[in-house]
Amino acid sequence: MRSMYAAAAFYLLVTTTNSVCAFTAGSGSSSSFLSRSHVSNARNTGCLRMSTVEKTFDEIVEELNSAKDSALAELNSSTTGEEAEQVRVKYLGKKGPVNQAMGYLRLLPNEDKPKLGATVNEVRDLLEEQCREFKGKLAEQEILNQMENEKIDVTLPGIANSGVGTRHPLSMTIEKATDIFVKLGYDTVTDRENSPEIETDYYCFEALNCPKDHPARDMQDTLYITSDMENMLRTHTSAVQIRQMEKRTPPFRIVCPGRVYRRDDIDATHSMIFHQVEILAVEEKGNLHLGHLKGTVTHFLQEMFGPSIEVRFRGSYFPFTEPSMEVDVFFKGKWLEVLGCGMVDPNVLEMAGIDPDKYSGFAAGFGAERFAMVIHQITDIREFYDSDLRFLNQFPHFHDEGTLRFLNPDQFTEIEKQEEAQMSAENARREKLDAEIWAGYTDGEESKGKKKKNQKKKPQPGETAAPVDVSKLDIRVGVITKAWEHEEADKLFCEEIDIGEGEPRQIASGLRAYYNVDELVGQRVLVLSNLKTRKLAGFPSHGMVMCAANEDGSKVEFVVPPEGAEVGERILVEGFDGEPATENQIIKKKMLDKIFPDLATDDSGVASYQGIPMKTSAGPCVAQNKLPNAAVA
Image (tube, rainbow, N blue to C red; front, side, top):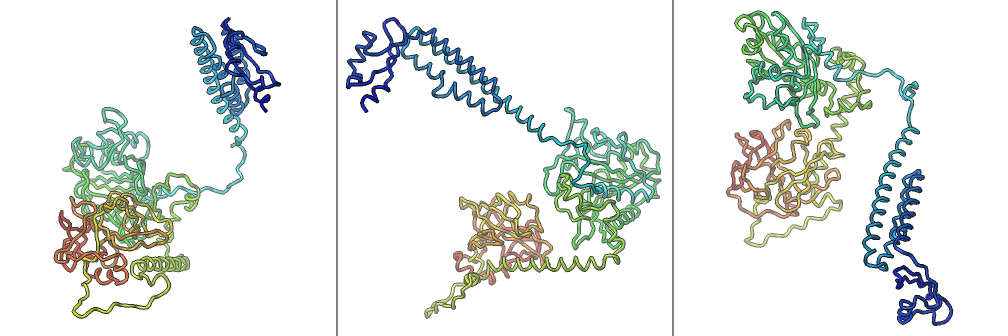
């Protein structure tokens, strides 16, 4: 064993002639071990039963350059990134010739050490750079080879789906709307010269009664394309009306469909690019009045949604019409805002070169996406632009097939019966889910399966039970920091709400029919915090968000704290100063059933308990839109 260790020993010593000597220990007797005196003698005499190989600085540099040339040659012959990496490890790795050359450094004279260090660094840097570049080229070539091997000849006949395609729902909606007005004698304006998508500030705003300092411009954040803010992507097709009034002589009627642009945050109901259809009619004064406008709009909506559609007009404001109105339809059980309209403002006529004392007119406009979403019950505007065939193939080939049921209801009696049965089953499923959700708050320990016998503690003589009132509820000011839609329950939002506890609470609320998820983040709310964590459709919910709801449930609003109320602050009611109940007491004593009937908003929308306002230190809490005389829960 001793001789084996000695045979493996390797020493590098510098001789008196400034060259490097390599000594290999011999084997055999115990003298094969080199003591310090042996090494000392070797330094002095250059020999001790050992052979020597001398290397000068120039010889080391020559070997280093030879290794460099070999590395570059092997690198150039590599065909894959893996082979190039192997070359790098071979020459630059721990046992490679570049690192081994550094082992000579301590054995060279002082004047040669900097030279060797500089040479080694130069070779290392060169090889590292060449390896990096060559590996990059090989990776790029591998991608090109893969693309070449996997390319598809698109000129071959398709086999996946050779059927006839379908029309895009937006194209059908715009086509149908335009056809309705064409039958009423309107001219279509869509050409690039008369309906440009790149507009000037004058046609887009100033000629429409919106000078540069007009506050109405704030409603349309604009995408400008020149630094002087004089040219932009148009925000509405109303600019087409100005161009036509400048070119045409009354009387005339036009319909202007087209694409428009606004700087909106993209979500389920907003897009930076969408489509509008606008109409304009101008005749001698007295020939057109508000009644004609209402009749035209009503006829149009009946053609779009069916002859039995209910229509209502509400007063509104637009800078280019006076008076102005918003129009709603009663569709699928609720009122929906669908378009705006009004009599053309005299200032607009005058700026377009038409005498407002001699002529008058009306205008109306709507978003094609809005109509398509209502008619086809589409919930996300982004579906229109994703080009997903699974979505697009659901629609008919021509625009009028989508409204056959409205115009010919007798032909769809059996289909409607089937749909009603499906809707009834869906409603039953939802009611069952609602019941399960509320059972989580009211069933308490009984919901766990085994019912325990009631073991009520008998009151001691002279002892009275503590009253159950609003003070038992620990209601806190909170702010929603995160919100998302529940994947399994179509009525539930999942929220994280900060109520001043350090970590946010996770709470589920059944508000998807009344709010969009984008409206929730940052919303200040009231949170009933002393409730046990319950799983609602699988989601662990710890607390309840307080809301006001009218009698039929068609309106539900958050009850919100006043400005200045601190997050985590408790809501109080004057005259009710008791301590909050524990989470177990709330459930076991069914306190919610006793307290909630006395919670409601008053005539001003202020949340109250038995007619007394619910307050923070900053003031009373109110329904978000001041919903009056509504239950609070």
